[in-house]
Length: 534
View (spheres, rainbow, N blue to C red):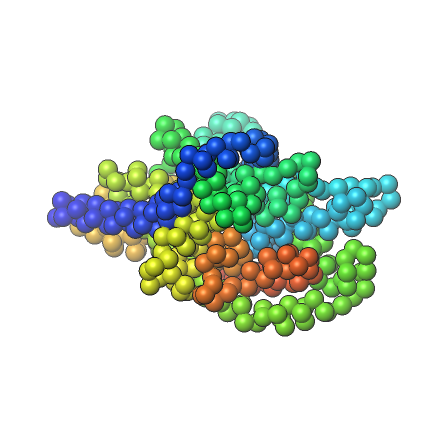
């Protein structure tokens, strides 16, 4: 029986490995086959290559450090203190992931502006500019902070509270408990989070596209976009190879760094009791972060109702009317369909892959893990072009399914890592105990594991949904002749320099995503009540 079960698990793992190879590696390889020696020479000889590499690395490293530290503080504030309004703060912390990254850049422009054109720049004595390195860093932090927050918060809620109680009895101060217990526990998760955030930032082109200057130059993602627009696919492929480096580095680090801080058994949940000073700090930190998140979004929304921002701030509804007249009411259902496909299929696939790589290990587990996290470093444009080339002559091309599949693959890595980190914190002996008692692995998964990780499953589904709602890069190449998603109207409005319409579409996407987040919060509350009544 055990041997048959192991063979079944191995068969499923091999099938998943082949699936990921077909939908991740093969499309990218088909893109890279366009690379020739002349492509390498053209890229290296380009005067923009070295500056773009430096710009990408410096902005990504700076933004990753800031984003990860802020996310750690936010996750710790909500998980380890008994402050009120946790649901409100949690919603505000993930708000930036509900709109496209380029919207954050436009929000920063509206708030701070360029040479005195922003809202804050109108204050006496201020003449600020958000362009260049500072603006790209701030915009990248806004874009990546929610993902880091979700990954860290998901793991903190499964930490065992017994070591903290023992340390408290021994009189160990809170700071020493944090450095001696919490940080070792989070070490592997912090590494995964850091690489996920870095690759998100370095492959994003929305923020740098809106905030770069001639003196600052391009980033690698922007340089790749320019080459795609000029049909230099070989040069774009070389840049795509460079942008894959962080994913490979993440896998190598994952292999060599042990996870001594993991706690497989939770004897009691980590408490949220704290002193008045800790609560005050948590309130202050959460409030400041929330304000910093809200200000650019609010400033961006002002442009919806301004006739011609910033020269004419007269109230108007013309941008909303023009947006719907240009087809927003037709494109919205398409986006909902694409997002629902990615949410359902992606969540199921991510859970299955995470379970097989963490709790049913075999010689195939490591390669499966590598393929599962590789997609985070594949820019949407590369993935979209790869799908166009690889699936061009198949029945899948030009359908709703290929867009849903591309969204699933594009956003797969972060939900997968979230579930990996979550499953690593659940008692690893559950399956062995079930085996001893004659309970099958499937029954353990359905009756024990799924209820235990249900909140992470909710987060994963919402992550797939909201990102599919707002993505622009890959779907811009795959949607035609398939139904067009709503997010493409942002790119069209940007090309027409119609910021009011772009803001309206962004706000519409935000409202949809907020509704989904609210439904998830309600489902979590109902689940908690049901658990408490059992």
